[in-house]
Image (cartoon, rainbow, N blue to C red; front, side):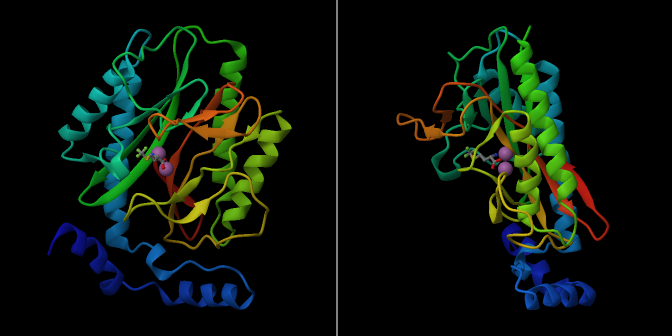
Length: 285
Ligand code: MF3
Ligand code: CO
Ligand code: CO
């Protein structure tokens, strides 16, 4: 059996527990959106996703240990590539829909999908998001962190901290049998209370067996709407929070990098998490 066939075989050999199926049926009868059974990961798959996520966290730890002023974003790419290989894993971004590098590095007004480059050196006062996704035995883990370079202004430091708080508030809302909309409602309420705006065009996602699976996890949404969070689902929460207006655009030259329209700063933090019967398990951070 190939790796691909193996990871899908568990949908046949490890069925969803009956009490979960019953509760899903109750939700369906109430008119709620219930996930396809393919989105509910089985024990062997969860083990694989947990391992990919563990390695992904170690890759980010390696970046955290080396990132510094004067380093180019290409050097971050080199670290991510080398450390991932050391763990016998693969960087998911490379060649994903034509993406050219191993990692995304998004500086200041870059919202996400910044492309590492030799000429892009990290300067004193920059804030940078490093977003890693690791594939191990066909399974995926996805996380990102912000790094402060040198002496960072109070405004930037606060944006980074409050964006982390937005992720934490999203994690608190991600309770089993809540909905995806509860996550975005909680995050956007907090972000707006701090005077920030929330990027709408990009969001979190199901993850684990593929890079991007359903559901789309909006970071601005209405409570009690969207897909029910069923134990066994693996999703990311990855709020992109802007200091100024919410509007963003894609780089017309590279077709990837997302910038704020007003040129003001943006921050993002991302975790991969498993919905369990009693809460959540953070798999990658
Ligand atoms: N890691 C990003 C996410 O959180 C996706 C990056 S896609 C890439 O979903 F091709 F730009 F790497
Ligand atoms: Co990511
Ligand atoms: Co993601």
